[in-house]
Image 1 (tube, rainbow, N blue to C red):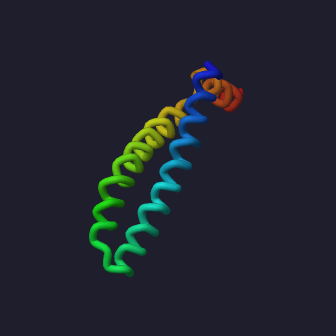
Image 2 (image 1 turned 90 degrees about the vertical axis):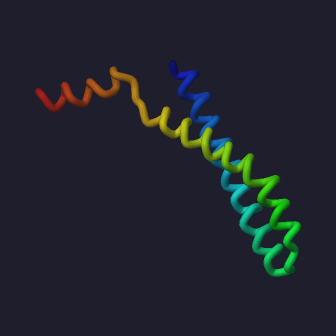
Length: 84
């Protein structure tokens, strides 16, 4: 079970990094395109960078959701300690 959790953690970190880098490239690229008045560059960033960035965000969100779960053994121990 620990190996699965570790794999999800790695997936979360990698997709988060990809999302952040993609977001920076997307925003900076579109800002430069707006400043230079290059409409074709805007379309390029929208067509090329946006889809992989959205996929990375989706995978990252699912991995984060899965990481929010703890094993039932870890949850029961603090409750038993409070009862005593």
